Length: 304
Image (cartoon, rainbow, N blue to C red; front, side, top):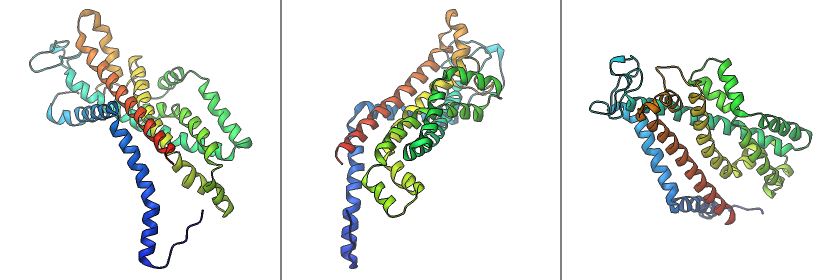
């Protein structure tokens, strides 16, 4: 469908507004569907509260998370330490905040990196198809056949464990799922009229992929990234629980669980339950948001 813009300024403005209004309506539809989902709003509230707790909390609740103090080790919750202290005397509430910072930062950055690389890989494989797409997707299949937790443990044992390396390790094996999703989406989008029109006008593959295919797969991308954040936080928790977390005095929720489980049967519940609850709440909240976004974008696509 071709559109001709009048040279008259007023007519041109009207025509442009007619082009922009449907896009705005689609965005409003997504927001309206998302807003009507009460569980999604609860998920957003939980995430906001957790972010405030982890990043604003330490500014209001000052604790020493560097020097150990064995004289107050394993103290139960009480005055001065609302959640007690751990086995080396760190205040557990302050530890929960510091651990949440690294868990959220690693989870979100790893998900964004995995999403970015997976989207590019899947879009290129889906657009070119043929021998190029086949080889690229067989590489994805080969990596998916390997137990991811085993590879993560192997890489964590080989490299120096710090926040940057943990982020890269988790991202390195989290891009496979978004790559498959975007590959399937691209196979459909590459046959649409607007992509064929770009080819007919002499546009290159890069223009078609980055300006038409990927933007029109944004719903799938956004939904997947929310799930990737939850998966990355779980992967980090698993590594920390198995002893491959960030070395003290740094912390993450998985490492706190690993340290606390030793004392669980001694009745020192405060060393494990708070970190476990934070992991569950965070993962659940991101999953609720992802479910709502998926429903919202599906409705938008149905109304096109």
